[in-house]
View: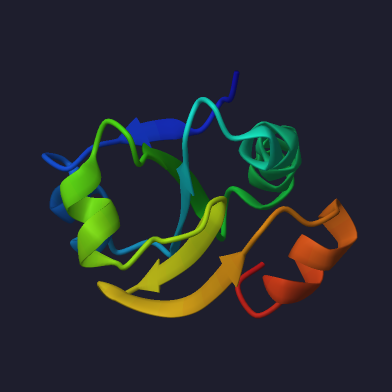
Length: 107
C-alpha cells in the first residue's frame, strides 16, 4: 500500500521522538478512504523530498496509545515532528500541491 515505514506504540519514541531527522507521521486506519487517498501522495513527497523529510505511518487502530497521546480524533492526521516536538499538524486529505504548500517549511 505504501512505501512509508510503519511505526507503532512500541517504536514511536525511538523512531520519531528521538530521531534527529524531521519526521512526518501519517496517522491512518485501514478502513479510512481519505487515508488511502493521501497515501500515494505521501509516497510521492517522500520520494521527492526524502532527504529532508522522513515519512512514517502509524495505524491508529493497532496503536491506540500513541493516537490518544497526540489527541488524534480525525484521520488522516499528519503531524510533523522536529526535535521530538510537534511543529505542524495537517488534518484531512489534500491534493499534493496543497500538502506541499503546507510542508514547504520542511521540504
